[in-house]
Length: 334
Ligand code: NAD
Ligand code: UD1
Image 1: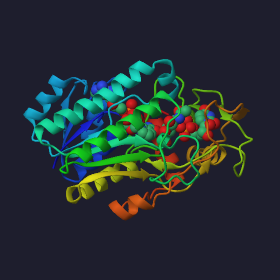
Image 2: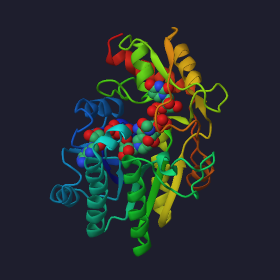
Image 3: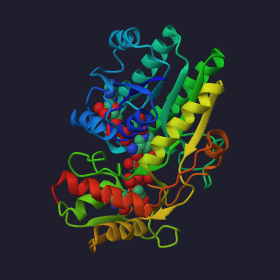
Image 4: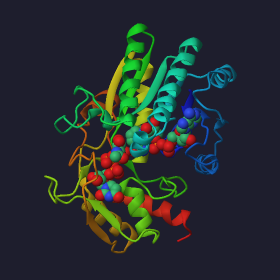
């Protein structure tokens, strides 16, 4: 199939492009490099031996997207393009509503006009808000607590309305838990600019000697060691989940919200220890105050993905840390 991957130069998108190319699909990437670099395209080619078609465009640019569809016989789209930093979304809500919502709206509009009805959307566990019991199940009510999360809830609602309006649509709303790790080749991974907000990139920078210690945000949660618990999944497992979703959508119409997680929670201290094993050294940490807005513990109920898509995350926390460390070493010539 010919698959459009918006945001395909980004962290999750690039790993998904690799899996799509390796499975024999043709990949057309649309990305404006607002949070990625052109070298990623070479890395995808180096891993797969295949060159994706690339358009450097803003996905919210109707004319540019329309031209892409006219020049390629697209069978389906995976929509990763968007902004994802929660803190920044509180500072710049309009930029988040504009970029996240308008890219999704424009893509859906052009797809409808061009008669392409298969769409996978990158949603997030953040749509479960703060009031649902764990493990999170897809049928729980949604309700986000920050502008980033609200863009995801709004887009899920828009796409649900769209699927209800025309039976030809097949839409998967994939709710990712905490993707970490890197491609085992060490050529692709996550390397945010500046001081990372998220746990794994932060630990990787401590291990690389670029930050002095990890701040553990709270050790008094009601969890097994008092630190926050999350459902970390390997980015390659996540990428494979998109292929499984696409296969399912070939044969089913309608809209489905589906969790992509392992169903297992790991604490901050457990992740730190797993990374220490991967890099072979002790990593310094300090207990810091809780991060505002954080929840103590959440993880996925992963059954629906297995039932519908036949997909299950396979890779261990140890493997996630080992792959992440390999990528960090390569990036920093360690
Ligand atoms: P990323 O920032 O690495 O990738 C997003 C890509 O989209 C980047 O390459 C960026 O340049 C591109 N982009 C952004 N706006 C664009 C626009 N208007 N036009 C064209 N390209 C644009 O992020 P990621 O971690 O790969 O996340 C991908 C998607 O998954 C996002 O929608 C994110 O909200 C969602 N998600 C991510 C996580 C996570 O932990 N990484 C968790 C849940 C959901
Ligand atoms: C983040 C996003 C969330 C997104 C999710 C999945 C925020 C506030 N939320 O949540 O919207 O859906 O990723 O990718 O960014 N921690 C530390 N020290 C650090 C960094 C993190 O102790 O320096 C702790 C956190 O308190 C948390 C855990 O590590 O307990 C994971 O944090 P993080 O990687 O930011 O992910 P989430 O909080 O799950």
